[in-house]
Amino acid sequence: MTDAPNPFAALMAQMQEMAKAMPQMAAFDPAKGFDAKAMEALWPTMPKEVMETWFGNALNENGLDAKTRLLITLAGLTMQGAQADSAVRQTVRHAREAGATDQQITETLGMMAMFAGVPAMTRAMELAQEVMDDDKDKT
Image 1 (tube, rainbow, N blue to C red):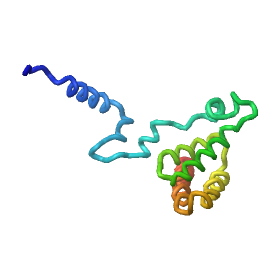
Image 2 (cartoon, rainbow, N blue to C red; image 1 turned 120 degrees about the vertical axis):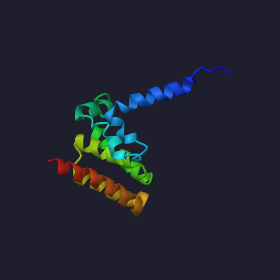
Image 3 (cartoon, one colour; image 1 turned 60 degrees about the vertical axis):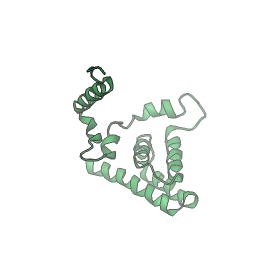
Image 4 (tube, one colour; image 1 turned 90 degrees about the vertical axis):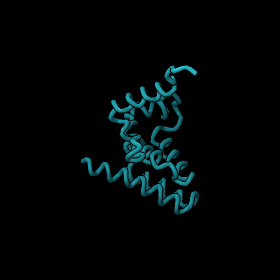
């Protein structure tokens, strides 16, 4: 056997040192546990114009606008049982940026009670309310 260093261990040590230099990586601190909201902060809310280009009708003239697509996405996430907390919160943030009102978001989620069930709708509503409350605290 040789005394050569293990290249995988060296790579892992290098990556850990690099991660320590990035303040955003605090979301991955094993001593504190995973922080989903800190992780969400790594992906900022896109401006409405960007969402219209990527997800809206900018390339499909008579297609759905970004706001409608995001409300549909929110309904789909609720249909899955609102299990992906970060995805629901991010979608609410993006829908609001794309022009959806709190009432439109609430109506979209409320309608899901019929299709996804009351527990899934309630969980999605709680997550959406977190976003709405966070935004009120910032103003």
